[in-house]
Length: 210
Image 1 (cartoon, rainbow, N blue to C red):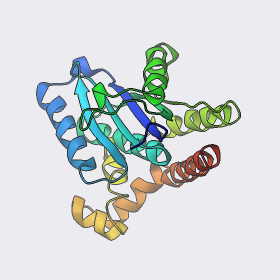
Image 2: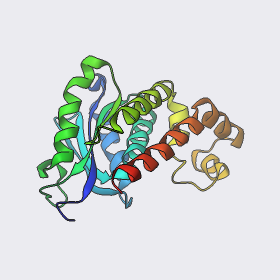
Image 3: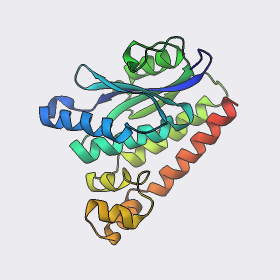
Image 4: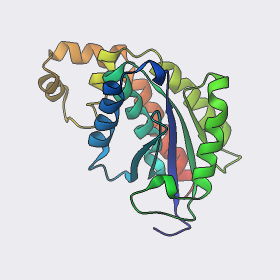
């Protein structure tokens, strides 16, 4: 990876982590690590620090999708969510397999933004170096998080299978539920709206960094 490469860095804090048991925290780390283990969109795997915070580096155009899936995992596994700040920018120093020791614009944008999110009551925000497209991206993320805040754990468990399974039937078989239950969860979770958000995000990032 070159220093001029543009990447996405996701820095997150698990919400209400003090109320989670050690087992729940362990399950979160295990589930997240397993879910993204063979995902080529993850450039540096998630590292946890302070027990309730994490960071990972991803392909810039997939940052939103990965953040959405992290929310689904957390809600499904521990009935909680995470405040996540996405920074899109260049890298200046990469430490292989240790995102916490890596450096660059994307890391600074991600970390600085996260500091204010709790006071703002926000769930997911993005910071780029594009003054032209930043307002549009900010607005779309704000709308997307309102959908995610309405998810139930059962809906999240279905949603997190969407990128992995080819059909709703496959999701039903994997979760041992009916096809009707899968369809209901996708509809109730307003997944089509999130899907449109993710497509719009990818197209916008391609325009900014073409």
